[in-house]
Length: 135
Length: 192
Image: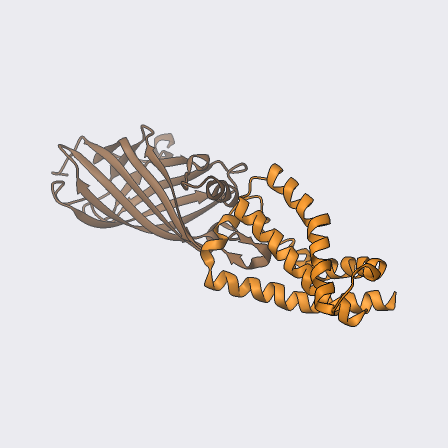
């Protein structure tokens, strides 16, 4: 349990910095990619910002628990294990969720694909962290 | 005594009848794009009536424009829906521009002139008075195009500018409001 929490916390901090830092830089240098977010589907009053910024930790703790249960199934170097872990997450969780999201919400394919890639990369980074911290 | 308490009946100086072909636009920006939303072909048969107490005072005006916020079109459906939501269109469906005064009447209706005047803009349940810049351009016989521009702020109307994905995408507080009205001049009395 201690390992789950500590590796989840470390992954959360790393993902927080990389995800939101990357998003900030990306918006600054490629603003045209974000014009689709001017859509009433997205919360506009700031009342849920705290939930948005906690996502990196919610994601990391959930995946940390998942890793601790199934880490024996991922073989190879820590990078290969992290990569495979990210692919499993993308296939099992991200793909179906993105599928239903695109089919039911009025958002563009670009947004859904970017979310898929964002989650996939986050899961790979988290997997690499778990493979290092909680081998 | 009863007559003494009643407001003086003012003789109007002239009337401008709003005719077809007007438009109203709001232009704003976010940190990722600019947006321009308009009500094209605005036409409601409103009349602006001009009064003047004496030759040294500004012209008072009665008349207003009531714009249906739901008619704003940003040429991008999500952006249009976003603006309507930001302006609280469901709760407050109209943006109203009430004309109050004009610093002077155009000296010659056959030349383009720049004037200033006061209006009240009511939006999202809040009314705010602004000085506005007008450009008046002749547009045919006894017809004019009245163009008014003014920068307003979302915050003037107690509206928080929309912010998305944790505030990483932010709408600027300033909005440029511009209206173009075609008017027909009635009962012009230059000798007053």
